[in-house]
Image (cartoon, rainbow, N blue to C red; front, side, top):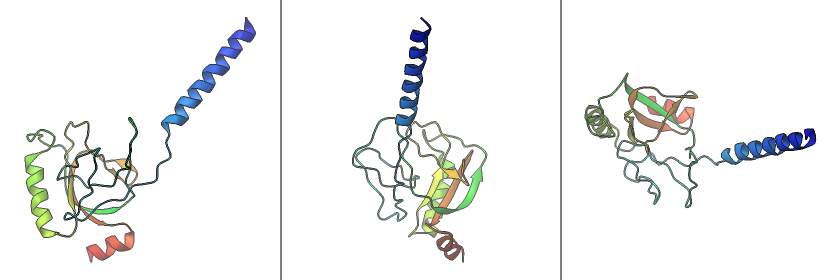
Length: 151
């Protein structure tokens, strides 16, 4: 009986380890499409006008989080919360973003509205998920790109 219990614990541990490693999928970061005139398109996701789109693989797996390559952006405005009066977005934040987009026609102005939306993109800032809402402008792939943009 003790050998059987030990064997069950070992099998359970192996199954748990297998499940954990299958959930950790190594992913090559995916290219961002920062030009508003040439947004990424995918058969798997319709990026919203306020999203910063990125390429997605030709085939995707369920329950896998896909991540873009790291990039630099300039946050133009933060909101502690947002009124999701547009459904998945805030009309006030979207008006601000559209005005910002006019000022930066070759760079995507994007927003995180923090509205309930299962398909929404999430943004990580300095290694932490952003809390609240913001409008930002894509500043480049590198610190040098961002510095040049700010200059």
